[in-house]
View (cartoon, rainbow, N blue to C red):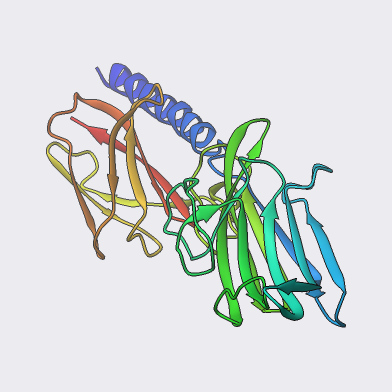
Length: 279
């Protein structure tokens, strides 16, 4: 009897070891690939002196193809007996699927829309940071550095990213930017770390474990806004919930069959995993 119990214990330990390895394999999968670019020195474009035109080709995923063109320029123009210089600063997409937003976005995909001047909170092919002169006025005349989300196409698939830009009517400064190389994945303005870029996989504290009806989960990092998933041994997601409050997370598991399961908690910058046994 003792021999059978010992063999069973060894079997459970070996099975748990295999499941732990499987857990690490599942959770080491790349869920986001954030490509960050720090423009050093900053890209500074100016429409001055009058008649000048500065442009810069932005290759966000550094594949040798221009995705957006930034420009600041000035030109002389007569309109209805008016004369003067026009000044403009803008960024435009080089493909009809490359569009820019004029305000920070939530952590959700961006969609192409129509718009005109800065402040419309829409997406469109060209974002006008400033224009002044007989050709028309586009406010504001100056903009403090802000994050501007965009959508662009890579091999006809949508990707989302952001640029940090400051501008006035005749000048434009681009500081840094990033793009999510995983097609269709959402992107937060200012996000520079992907889930796969986290320095380490942390451990969730789960109790009771084994459990029957409800488990309590404590995360080693602020989890509000993160996504908690419970998977079976085949990697299938059985439960997926967004964390909406601080403190320990309570999860009902009474509808699940007995066995080994995996827990995975991810936020913008961290991830943590654990195994849980239901009986």
